[in-house]
Each structure stands twice: as C-alpha cells, then as structure tokens.
Length: 184
Image (tube, rainbow, N blue to C red; front, side, top):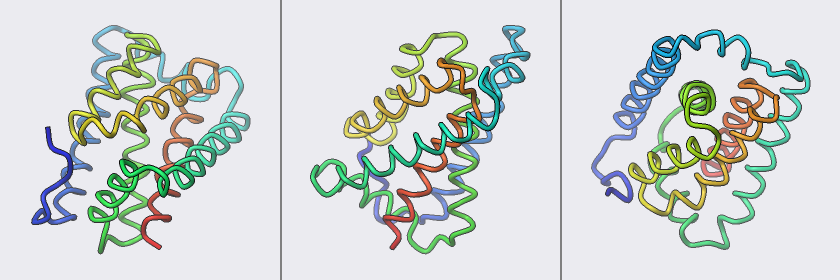
C-alpha cells in the first residue's frame, strides 16, 4: 500500500494518469449501467426530484462546508497535514486551468461511477465502503478519515433526491477550494 507518490514522480505524470483513470471510471460507470439495463438512471438521477436550482444550492453548500471543515481540521491533525503535503506536491507547477479541469473531470467521473452506477447497485453503505476502500488502497489508510464522511455526504445528496448535479457540484467545489488553499 503506497502512502504517497515517490518524490521522483513528475506531477504531470500523476495528472495524466489521473485523467486516464477518470476516463476509465466514467466509461465503466456507463457500461455497468448499460449491462444492468439501468441507463435511464442517468436521466432520472441527473437533477434528482428537487430540480437543478435546489441541487446547485445544496451542492454548493455541501462543498463549501466540506472545504471549511478540511481547512479547519488540517492544521489540527497530522494525518491531514500529511495528505495536504502530498496533494500540494502533486499539483506544484500545475497551472490553474489544468488543476480546475482535473477537479471537474474527477468529480464527474467519481459521481457517475460511485453515486450513479455503484449506489444504484450496492446502496449507500456499499458505495461508501467501496469508495473508501478504493481510495485508501491508493493513498493509504489515512485517506479513510476523509473518504468515509466525504462519500457518505455525497451519497446522501443523491439518496435524498438532490441528484448527481448536487453531488458533483459538492465534490468539485470541495476539491477546488482545498487545492486553492494548498496552492496559496
């Protein structure tokens, strides 16, 4: 289990691998839905039952809340300071546009795979477990501190009818604000 990328890894290689991984995740999500004849869920879950405006507001609020909590907890918990340092190393020298595109691609792919395809098949808690285990296998056990509440909140947004728009917005806002905090 790798705790952080080796120091000799080029951040652009990490980002290129991330973009490729996100593409594979999006294709896998759509394939998983198609294989179960559930592609209509994309339309049904896109904006949820509350519509795009409320989904946008709730997603923005959830993303801001998660970013504020991370900013408050990070200086207080060594494990979060270590994660922040790893993320900062990965994005050093990466332009604002590339970082923003990475955040958006990641949010879209993760929400398609986990909140749409996986949550439809495994339910909320199965998806939280899958999401948390996947990310902890990549970033080490310390990611569980972030991934479990993050996955639970995003899954609840979809389960409570706010749709993928809300969960994707929350995911992207939190990651973007955390990156901006780390890059300042």
